[in-house]
Amino acid sequence: MPIETAIPYCGVAPTPAELVGRWNLDPVLIAVLAAALVLSVVRLRDKRRLWALAAVAALAIIFISPLCALSAALFSARTAHHLLLMGVAAPLLALALPMHKQAPSLLLATALQTGLLWAWHAPAAYGWALSHDSAYWLMQACLLGSSLLFWLAIRTAKAPAAVAGLLAAMVQMGLLGALLTFAAQAVYAPHFVTTAAWGMTPLQDQQLAGLIMWAPGSALYLLSALWSLGRWLGRDELPVTVR
Image (cartoon, rainbow, N blue to C red):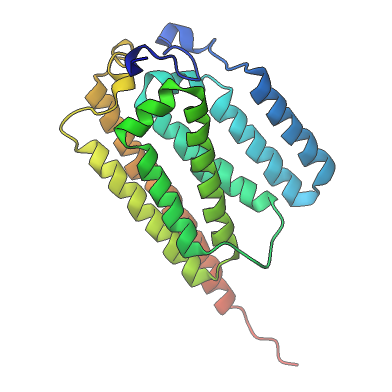
């Protein structure tokens, strides 16, 4: 089936007039999120429960709200979708999980997240993901899973290493965003005929996606690095109690 005629998991690309009613009511997805919600309430306590509930809410916005349908029309919406998955849902899940002595390697986790992000944004891989439901969920699992490992590694790393890892993630996100922003032509075939209803050419949509990665995407990792750095410096400035 040609990519242009395939129906993505989130359905046929909506027009602006259709968007508000385009909620994804996939019963399997809703059952999975409902089970996660129940487990969060029953099994977790205190802050970990709050983080888990926030993660489930973020996943509902990503996969159930009209954002899912909009991402079938606009590559820029798909980019926002991926940023929410990797930069909001993944760190919330990392905070909800218990700490383990055997933490993931930050170097490997950073490399894995970077490699999978770039691989799934190759035009052929992206087109495949939007033309087969199994490929779509493989893409989501790769991006969420690698980002979860990254944020778990950040959570357990010492402050200097955590800052370095976050800055590395910021640089690679900004570089991918810059490549998309300054590309001379649109390269994502699934959106060649879906952007006109939204008043954009495919190239303008792709450039907007690049700017989303370049600015808010990179800023997310930069702010996290500054927060980690601030906590580290704040601990160094704490007064020493003389006994």
